[in-house]
Image (cartoon, rainbow, N blue to C red):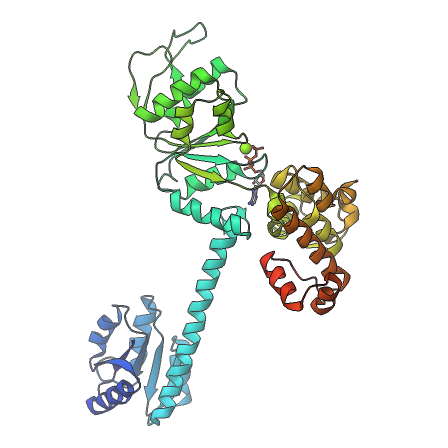
Length: 456
Ligand SMILES: Nc1ncnc2c1ncn2[C@@H]1O[C@H](COP(=O)(O)OP(=O)(O)OP(=O)(O)O)[C@@H](O)[C@H]1O
Ligand SMILES: [Mg+2]
């Protein structure tokens, strides 16, 4: 129900408005006292205010001014029998939504209200869409519009706030660290530290003291006490990157720390409590590592409470144009250049390439293209040598040994449709003929694969 607040010292008129608007399905509150009306308005439940200009205790203009000054956003429509152009202007300047001269015909008022509702509806819809867009296409610095990425953003937002351990899997360069950071910065721990440690890059002995810390004299080089990374991450998130590389003895120790939420420094006799959220990442298939007895099963179960998988870029080519645009903006800014376009030929090559190095490779390729671009456009000649020949996604998929007919067919279909659309300058009717499928089937597939129609 749409609620209207009517403010007018003249009771007869106020009551008349109430009857009129109630008939039009509005819920009306009539308030002859403007001071009280300001209080009513503060409840935020009214969709619109109808306010008289000439009132003895508080003028309509003063009402308007006070409402706007305190930041009310409810639209206010002013009404007056003595309207001169000056009063109208003054009210509009003070932030009135509209102005209506008394006497008015009921239809006139209803029309003004309908228009306002329409506009408000559009505005709200607009805001909702904007929010939705941000939500689905972007999370922190992560972009993506493919179904799996949208799902991923949703999952991140859903699980960020829990303390349960997250295990992120995905090929190199798919954005595992980015996801780990997003989990931290979307959680209640965002103000706490985010500490990342690469378990594959540090030798075993060192890693132990790095993670857990040590006390003075624990070993020859331990000349003073050292806090470990677990202690550093207290109140925040510890990101254990390349967890698959963690040596077996440390796996035992890590499991104990996670289970007991307690850390004991090397050479110490006591443990101390910690509050750390663990996020781990690996490019390995950890259950295979478990089968091969290189990874402890109990630790795997402990880590894999909330599994998050990031698919390789070649399985979500719909994200490529968005990522290219994103990195082009970043590179232009960093390099102080103004490269903001990609010509269709170059874009076709970029979307067709299978990106074995995933998003990181794409990022580097775009930066390089930005460096070499002469004008504001990325063209095929600023893409790496040999890139063009490598872009045969179909051939590469077949060469990769992929046996799934479903996956391969999707890639082939996607490729053929993209080519046909390019060949016909985006003419879907002609493209459908070339592809020997119905126009309807083509439209359906364009939507399913989120293929961009090239401009004619
Ligand atoms: N969806 C995305 N949107 C924007 N940038 C991304 C996205 N995914 C990855 N990146 C960028 O790609 C690069 C590689 O990402 P990141 O370091 O998180 O990958 P990774 O999976 O940890 O790789 P590795 O396994 O090699 O460590 C980073 O610069 C990151 O910002
Ligand atoms: Mg990484």
